[in-house]
Length: 192
Image (cartoon, rainbow, N blue to C red; front, side, top):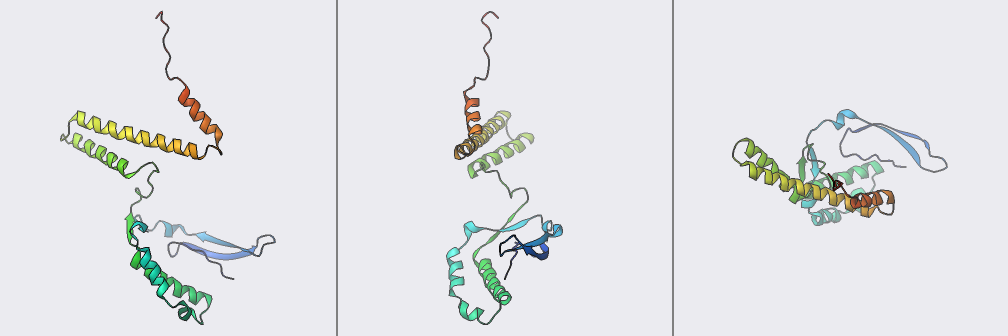
């Protein structure tokens, strides 16, 4: 029996123990501890950039290897180490890495490239206005345009999520529809 705990970094998991069986099943429980020191080691995360990856070359590199000869006469642990070595070499050669800083790792789902450009323009206009290089009217127009697009993108994302989950969560859908149908302001009496 071979149980694996796969992690993306060495030293992330410790104290791996096999516990008893799970009911009448033939599976066993695995208990492990996630080490905090290993998680906080780097502020910049190197991640694989699959958009620029050459997956055809990756497939060819792993497909060319004579696996029967490479794994012949080896136990499970040795076979795993041989496979892992070849896999990591092919990955390093075919899939480039990119650095992600902590603030850019999680972007909101409604933030697309066009919207990101508008937000950057807004920041540049703010910086320019503070330094006296941009007029107030130009700065205000840039801020309004960016805010309008952000508001519309958020509303579109909310509507798409409501439409996707209309069967599972009918109350939220009909609450949203009824909020849209209500009038916002009241008219004063004609005598006032």
